[in-house]
Length: 298
Image (cartoon, rainbow, N blue to C red; front, side, top):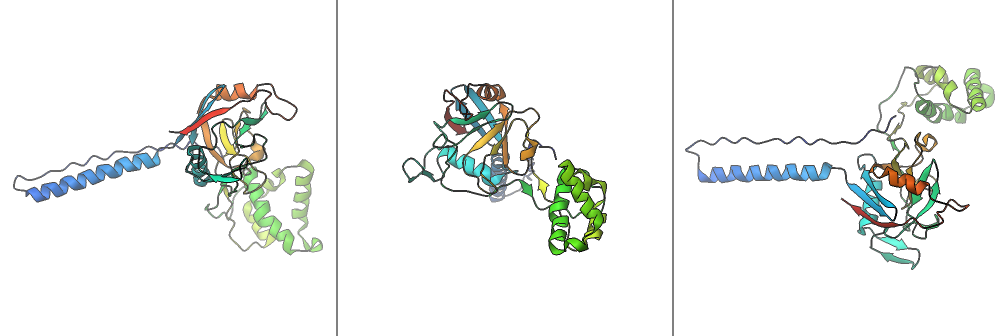
């Protein structure tokens, strides 16, 4: 599933009001009031549907990021709250609850060429965060039921394994399991891939395993591609404040579904690459600090 740019077009509807000559003044005022209210609603709609822009100012240049609340609403709200200082967080230096801009003055503490640049740790070591954790937003679980057809990609193959094959293995004994399914899994293990699962259609697995529940695969919201900004974590549902920007032109497919994508760089990838190429120590930390002097939301 390719990352789609979340572009929202707002169509303005103009109200044409025709009034008769004998219409009362009170009716005219009422119509005018309704028109004003409608215009106000349109303006509010525009404000609420335009994607927010984060400007990350650094000592090596500026990076402009389009945030994507339709893909990751909680993650975007968290980033904005921390950046603007409207969200409370625990300062690991003072052990105090504070409300102040979180990212201003922090460094990019981990930089790996042809992979990513990472920042958002208040201690600058990659070991701390805002004092809380929240869940991932990698998948949409409101997809449609699949009953038949070819398994066309490795993600659906993985979902077939997790949602159909794995439960089958858990409720059966090794001696009673279908030999063909066991052979498929052995081949998957040999090639370190789910491609062998893709050789059979969906209905074949549902029948072989006696799967009674609906097969509704999760839908990956966004791939960890070149130029995206995603949350760094220490495992599932451990998001806080640390994030990374992907510098590999081929993306980081192995991170799909493991890290929440919540935006994309729209200006300043040259700055991102400049940061990527600074001199680092053995721990991938820049020898000279690369500082986020200010992070603001437009």
